[in-house]
Length: 137
Image 1: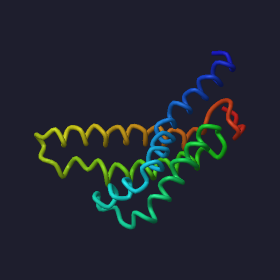
Image 2: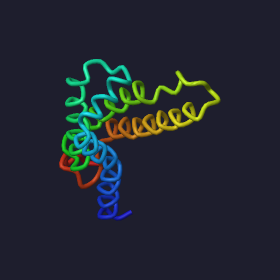
Image 3: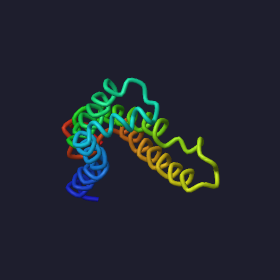
Image 4: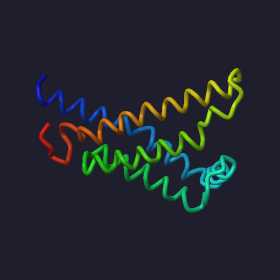
């Protein structure tokens, strides 16, 4: 495959990967108070402290991965966010196994784990072509 296509696909892949985090961060900023209440309802400790931290992890991690600058660190930030969000908000194991809630939360949990896998891949392999890290691939 030509290098320009590898670069294009690397950038496009990083953009598609982080779009969910940037959109989610924007939504949580817009509905800040509602997000704090949701965190409290999910028994997240210290929501007023952890929400700003989560927003920093989502935004800084996303921008880092997107432009490929310190992308491994950015992917680690997103990985931490994904695992914590999955455990606190998509804990399907507390719902009755035959309920719609169980299935919906299980799907969301697995979605987070799938994206966590992508972050592990980035941590292991870097951002790819056309990244500011300038890493040879």
